[in-house]
Length: 105
Image 1 (spheres, one colour):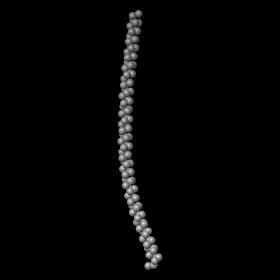
Image 2 (cartoon, one colour):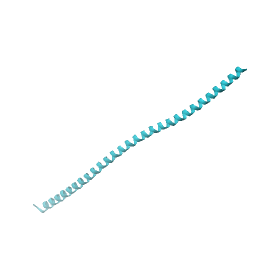
Image 3 (cartoon, rainbow, N blue to C red):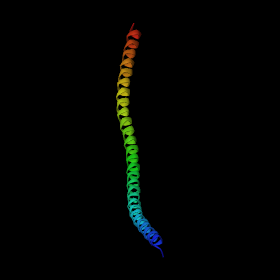
Image 4 (cartoon, rainbow, N blue to C red):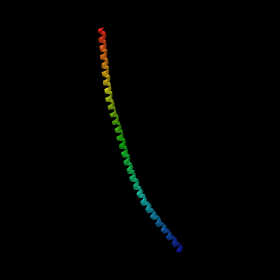
């Protein structure tokens, strides 16, 4: 083997070692990124679960508020009806008084 061939073999060996080092570095980086991806997916699943729970809670609260408003409206409606009944009773009383007065004439 000539010196030129020996030098080429050494260069080839050096490049192969560099490629092996790069491969190991890339392998390590790939493992780290894969782990980060798995962690991110776990976080996303947790957040999606929290979002679903928050939506459910919101819908429940919205329904409760609608029922609460309906109860308040019901109380107001009952009060209004009671007042109207009193006014009708007063009118009936006045009409009865007028009829008595007219029949006495």
